[in-house]
Every structure is written in C-alpha cells, then in structure tokens.
Image (cartoon, rainbow, N blue to C red; front, side, top):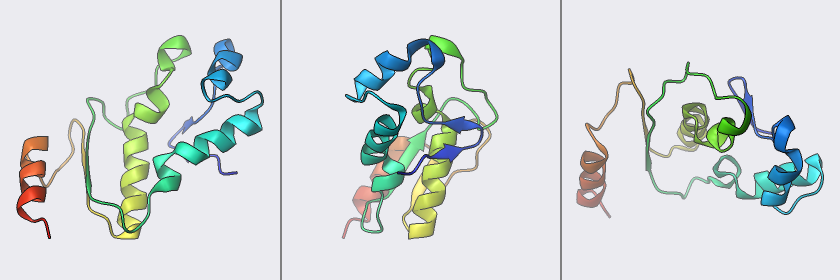
Length: 122
C-alpha cells in the first residue's frame, strides 16, 4: 500500500466525515481506503505507454487546500496533484503540460494543445 503525499497534502478522509468518505470507495478502515485509492489513482496507474496530457488549474501550487467539508475532492483536484503527476510523467518520458496562474507553458490553451496533438499523431 502506498500513501501518496504531495506538498502538505495527503489523500484521506477528514475528521468530520470519515465514515462517509470511506463508504464512497466501499471501505470500512483507513488501510482498506488507502488500498482502494491506490487502485484508482493516476499516480499509481500511469505508465510509460500512456499518452500526453494537458492539465489546467485555477490555483497556484502555493494556494492552500480548503478545510472541512469544502476540502472534499480538492486534494486530488488541487494543482499539487497535477505537479506530482507531471513529475511522475516526466520521469517516465511522457509529455504533460501543467497550467496554473504564473506557470510557463508550451501551449497557449487547451485548444492549442489538442490541435498540436492531432497534427502530430502517428
């Protein structure tokens, strides 16, 4: 079982909704929950034969994850997840473009990205 961590953020339920969050994945314990998260996480599933991806976020890596009920879903949707995924993809030699406020990008927009990908299909 791997527990992913990126920045100060970790996968896992929040104290107020532990059992509800476990039930989302059909788990009853923290260990079972973490195993299920690993089974579906892009960080565990990505492999060198996967295609390039374009990720776009409206927050910067320095922006905090909300607390409490608002945080539900943010940990995997926070730009820090995109940073971790981009790093893993780079290590595997897979192109990825990560867009967030203040980032430098190869493509001007998701449309530019898709046009480039379609033109360069093999």
